[in-house]
Amino acid sequence: MPVSGTTEFGKLKKSYSKGSELQGKTLGIIGVGRIGQALAKMALGLGMKVIAHDPFIPEVKVAFDVHIYGEVHVTLETIGLNELLEQSDFISLHVPKPKDGALISTAEFGIMKDGVMIVNASRGGVIDEGALLAALESGKVSAAGLDVFVNEPTPRQDLLDHPRISVTPHIGASTNEAQTRIGIELAEKVIEAVA
Image (cartoon, rainbow, N blue to C red; front, side):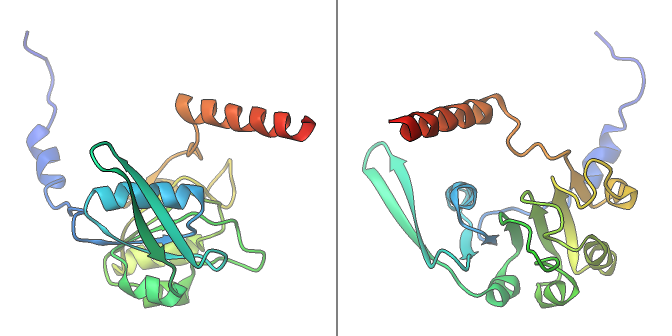
């Protein structure tokens, strides 16, 4: 059945034709708690080099359940923040909001590779939003993904409208499966507390 109207498929295809593969690229994970470790597993599975920074966790063992061989462990040693910023093609943040300003601001963007991509799914304020916009405009940062903002639920309009920022409304744990896991974890903690 023919579809009426125009999809501009060719134009869309051309606009998305300059992507970048993840295999062989370096992912820097800032904060390697439970969520950072889950991301590390996925990235390693995609063939990425994974480096990590966490002032509270000096070494992380990431376990994979490989059905033929049993459990396989990969050890990630954490490195300094500046080292991570210098080496990463992609950076993902999984940390609490610092008490004294943003963790990533103008100085940190200056250390990063040109064309880096950055994702903040932790807390608003971890990245200085003004510095991020400046880094996007200069080309230092080629793209950003933001799930959290300083002024939630009314974030800056220039962040929402920026053509190289992909935004979501703080929905990092808003899947049916994640909500089930959260419920189970809470129930286990209540049982443990009363036992």
